Amino acid sequence: MTSALPEYSGPGLKVAGVNKTYPLNSGQHLLALSDINFELQKNQIGVLIGPSGCGKSTLLRLIAGLESLSQGEIQVAGKAISGPGVDRGMVFQDYSSFPWLTVEENVAFGPVHRGEALSLREGVVEHFIRAVKLAGFEKAYPHQLSGGMQQRVAIARSLVSNPGLLLMDEPFGALDPETRWQMQSLLLEVVKKERTTVLMVSHDIEEALYLADVVFFMGTRPGRILEVIHPNFERQSDSRDAILDVAEYRTLEKAIRQMMRAQSLACA
Ligand SMILES: Nc1ncnc2c1ncn2[C@@H]1O[C@H](COP(=O)(O)OP(=O)(O)O)[C@@H](O)[C@H]1O
Ligand SMILES: [Mg+2]
Image (cartoon, rainbow, N blue to C red; front, side, top):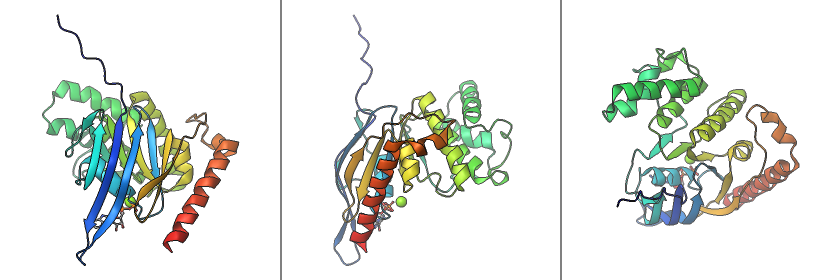
């Protein structure tokens, strides 16, 4: 008799005892990340926030498998990673679409590259182009799109491969405030619907509190996690402004602002 394996029910991401050192020209080493330990549950959005240089991008690159760990282990959906993989998608601040491909070719790139069936791919590509509200722009090239639209192409391109974990490094940092708000609402809508686990880097407190199920506040020298915060607001993507009036939001916003300031003073 065969029995189906039970569905994996552990965390979407587990980072345990991670250190990262870089060699310096002097022959010494820089401890960029020290003893990083955290978990992100499946279908949650985690936001890494902290002062510049505290190792946010380094941590994301380690989880993406783009750099090697000096110590520790990273598990995605219960499996230790040992390099890049299709279980993880990555979106960077600069719009990482291929300029010579159309929107639909960009979105289809991953599955095509892996030789997946055409029929399956077309339905999925259309689905995600619609999800990021780019229907009608399938044949456009990236240079014909605004910054926000180009970033939506990058998000659709990552989601189309159905990654268990979507990693985003300040994805909206280059956008104007209004576009950034729209993108945050869209991201919330899409990842909750697609049931994607997201780890995102931000240095914007408002963005972190609006998007995150859990905020990891990082400090510097060495880069480490100082606080884990679970904002507990009612979130509705169509009432973005309402959150600014919530007392708990304002308390957390102030606390994080003070932690940011303390970190900057410590580094001055
Ligand atoms: N490839 C590298 N070689 C040497 N040092 C690096 C490298 N990448 C990052 N660092 C150092 O690691 C620290 C963390 O950098 P980074 O992860 O980019 O910070 P953040 O994204 O939080 O601003 C910084 O001191 C940075 O100079
Ligand atoms: Mg960075």
